[in-house]
Length: 138
Image 1 (cartoon, helix red, strand yellow):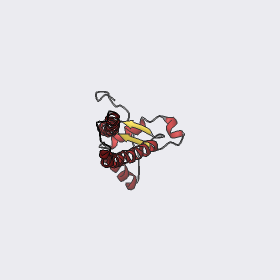
Image 2 (cartoon, rainbow, N blue to C red):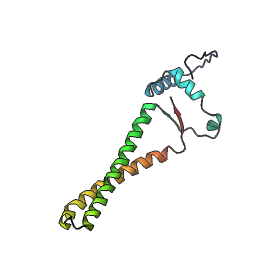
Image 3 (cartoon, rainbow, N blue to C red):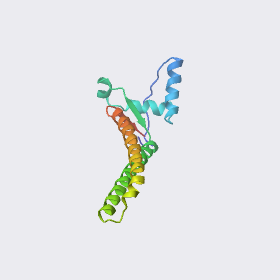
Image 4 (cartoon, one colour):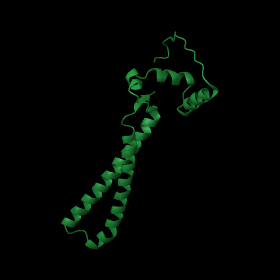
């Protein structure tokens, strides 16, 4: 919403002290005021609530940028590992790489690829858990 746009409708609500504290904690955790959080929730499409999909993810642009950086790092690591394996294959084929080197290099490469694979599994599980979520950003 454009900050210059006038807000002309009032909304008053009574809640318990516990509900208010929870609202304040939620707003603080995502860096919003209570009013901003309530406005954000009011923008949710009604079918989302009607279908019982209450898995809501509020994410700011900074968090999206950090997630993007981490995904790029994962892709870079995988690309470097693939490049290294292709280089080894090339030099083996040309006879300019000694097989003795592989006794040292292959276990290290395998360990690094296993680490990348574990990172990928963790990322995949996290992303899969969000598949049915409703995303709201600001």
